[in-house]
Amino acid sequence: MAEKTFLVENRYLNLPVKNGAEKRVVRFMLDGAEVYRFDIELAAAEADFWVYADLTPFQNSQLTLAVDGVSAEVLAALVQSDTPLGMDDLYCEKYRPQFHFTSRRGWLNDPNGLVFYNGVYHLFYQHNPYGWSWGNMHWGHAISGDLVHWEELGDVFYPDHLGVMFSGSAVVDWQNTTGFQDGDDPPLVCIYTAAGKPFTQCLAYSTDGGETWVKYAGNPVLGHITGENRDPKVIWHAPSRQWVMALYLVDNAYALFGSPDLKTWRKLCDVYIGDAIECPDFFELPVDDDPANTRWVFWGANGNYVLGSFDGATFTPESKVLHYARGGDSYAAQTWSDTPDGRRIQIAWLRVNLPGMPFNQMMTFPCELTLRTTPEGIRLCSWPVQEIASLYDWGVHWADETLAPGETLQDDIIGWGDRFDAYAEVDPGAATTLNFVLRGVPVTYDVAQETLTCAGRTVLMPLVDGLFCLRILQDRAALEIFGADGLVALPLGLIPPDDDLTLRFYAEGGPTGEFLVGMHTLLSAWAGDEQADAEWLDDDTFPF
Image 1 (cartoon, helix red, strand yellow):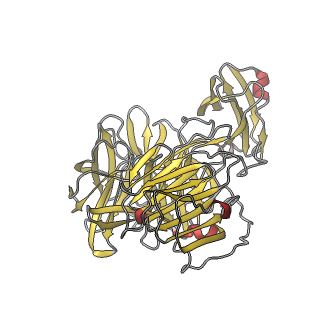
Image 2 (cartoon, helix red, strand yellow):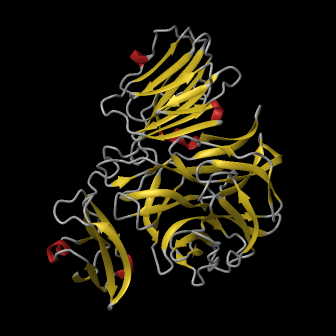
Image 3 (cartoon, rainbow, N blue to C red):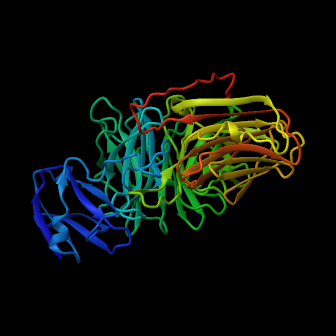
């Protein structure tokens, strides 16, 4: 084992990563005691990219770095700095999504701890800060005032003696049921799984509006129940004046638990939603915007959901197991708590490998959820949040036109860039197939079968009052498709061809009826000083 002892004088310790190298265990030691450890594919020579460890907790201390199986020369390359190394092209990397959230460095998966407080949306997420692949689970933390422009604050929850940091949720404890409040701000409380031996549920809290966080000294607050029970989603249920936790147990089984103070929990009931596992969500929504007619939604990680009622003790299903965003690449979706306008806003992990990048995976774009009555019954719908308009740049639309077979709009929409928000409302007329080709990626709609196909995935997508209705968000590594006014979602992680910036729309089998097709190119959410130089289209000409 090689060791290096040094005085911590800067914020970051920089570490070189070589994908595919042997993983090394890195230990931080203070006064002979281990205070932190992680594994990393440490580069012995040329690095693929640099990552960093935040040394803030160890400032002005003599820290010993101990690493198995490396030379003293390798340790000597691990240098301190106040600015992380290798960040010269941050947010400009080849495959960096420009309006979907990604972490600066390392692996990202499940969204966690979604809560709004004092004008700020908090997004925590599963994060491996030391590599391109899953591992070393921490909670990363980012904030936004508009769900579009994000500021990454760094990792906030680290592995400890109870285990690594698995998924969970967050709430504002407005009534200080926990007794954590210390000042004017109500406590913000995160509820998470410590994935140790065994898995247990724990708390962390902030008394300054989310700037700093402390793990609760009385953890765990819910001990081991069965298997790898995990991923607590907690809400406040006002009618029964209690906190309610949805928790995954084992073998497609979930349960609800109740608590007066987030610290002591009792089981309320079991819940089953088909073949779903992990990452539950539980929330109430009005049907067709009628506050007197609501349903509770119990959601699983794979997009399974069940509608029902909840009386504070029992969730009673009132629908079969339904599926949303099935067949796409999203997983482990979660909704924000305490949103200021009552919207139910959801974000999910969008699974896509990003080769050659110092980061990996991404989030979907935030969407608003609603319940709508359809001929098949009440169904969940989602639609990109309206805040995306803050990124609109150049726009174009075609209205009250038709296309004959063989005609295309290709000549008018070449070179529009690598990210856009597009919309189509088409009377199919005599056409048998409607086709969009987006940067070389075909999206095909079979009119007779009412099915939409993209990237080898096919979903049912009904016409709406006889019209084909489609919304598409395209980014550098994502294509998110919304159909039938949000009844269908197909989020896809994919990388289009580098040299294809064309967009085409054409029909086969017969002429279309009249259609509206429109699009906006999008500015980068990361370029804070970028200004729109747009031909703005008003709401009457561009309907979203």
